[in-house]
Image 1 (cartoon, helix red, strand yellow):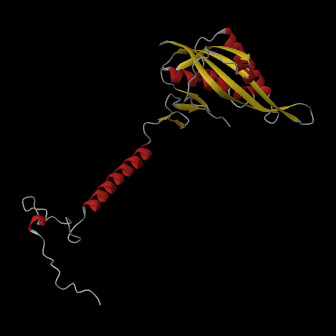
Image 2 (image 1 turned 90 degrees about the vertical axis):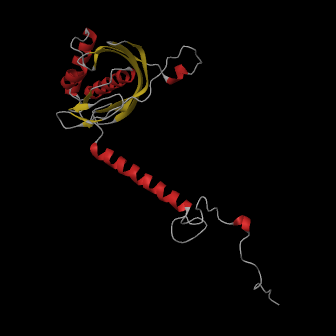
Image 3 (image 1 turned 90 degrees about the horizontal axis):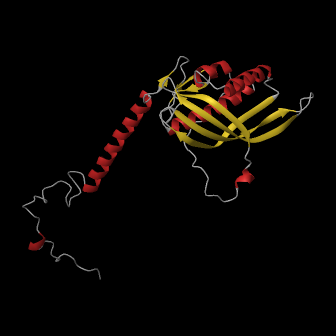
Amino acid sequence: MAKNFSKVRTDRPADSAPNRATGSANRPGAGSTGGGLLDGDRRWYLLGAIAAVLIIVLIIGMISGGGTDTDTDGAKAQTVHGPTSFADGIPSGYTHDKGGAATAAVNIVQALGKADVGKADVTKIRERMIAAQPSETLVKVLDDTKRRGASASTNADLFNSVPATVTVRSLTDTTAEVSVWTIGAGWSAINATGQKAATAIWSTTDVQLVWEGNDWKVRDWKFRTGPEPEDLTAPTNNAPNIETGYYSFFIN
């Protein structure tokens, strides 16, 4: 037989009555499912409103561009340490700190590598990246690069230099000494029939920079092959600190 619940008391004991001093019995949603939002619902609506505001702020920031600089070619750049602008694919404009010097050194190594195979204009590199009074060694490097670039066939050699490590060996308000260890990889023609062979060369370039015209410019340059990776596997306590976060650019 089913139990009879008709005589069960439903009135609330005195000690469980609403706290009239705080008015909790009359607050919408407090112990009731009608007439307003529950506390949990209120929190979700508040979080949703905050998220909507953040999304709007991010959209406005992306539209405004965040202080991006524009050069005469209309090219834009926005990186932590530079560059801030490009002209004919050549970057310039670096921060007056260690990161800016490291990035400037990396970019000049890549720019001259591209000019060496006719992919960049040495005259533009000299205008934007070279100091007003470069060393005799650097002048010779620029002249040799211009000569090789002028005679390079776009189909004969394809070569890219990629920085492996960058070390700022010294830094002052006006000068910086930076070493860039790179891997150069590409394809080179080996005979008149058009056959090519893959090439990979590890090398180190020591770049001397000066702070000139409110930018880092290259004053001197020293190049040497190596070291090979297998030569660096022995433990040492004299390994220099390397930089991270430098900007590497691309010229097609």
